[in-house]
Amino acid sequence: SQQGEEDPQALSIQEGENATMNCSYKTSINNLQWYRQNSGRGLVHLILIRSNEREKHSGRLRVTLDTSKKSSSLLITASRAADTASYFCAIYLGAGSYQLTFGKGTKLSVIP
Amino acid sequence: GAGVSQSPRYKVTKRGQDVALRCDPISGHVSLYWYRQALGQGPEFLTYFNYEAQQDKSGLPNDRFSAERPEGSISTLTIQRTEQRDSAMYRCASSPRASGRSFDGNEQFFGPGTRLTVL
Image (tube, rainbow over all chains, first blue to last red; front, side, top):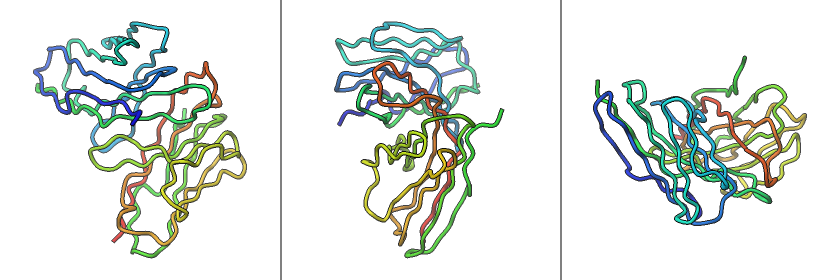
């Protein structure tokens, strides 16, 4: 399967702590994206990192990409209760491909 | 501005009935995608439209599933002769650019989904 695989499957932390989620994949990609899904709601795009980028920041989010290891990580700093959600990585292969391939997600619980 | 909308939000049907799920993408978005998401899983690709052209339907599970986007805007996913295994959340997404090219960012904007339950 080409899909991204998130690790861990579930993560529980205290408010204010940092949360790190990892994603591994098996094939060459054009870009990798992270999405958040709150309970019972739609997916929201968080950040996109291209294959020629190594690190990207957006507010309290930091994403890294290591194409040699075919892995990415999402770091959420100073977590808040509102960050409680499932986080998915999705890979986009690029030319000739139309779809995003999602992993199974990491369920993050931030305890107030 | 308005995001992607889907209707109905919930659909309960009996096995063997046909259902039609509607997606209204963000105005002006070229690309439209359908995904299916089982509980505890990530979305699984079903099909992709570039304007009105269905360019990839490789994810449709079988010939009971079909989709159309006749005017390049609203799309309908139809499931004929529904079965219990079709029960899932069906999600639609749109993107401002065409997909399939090397430098396409392909960020997708998702709708709230339609929860389909087949009894």
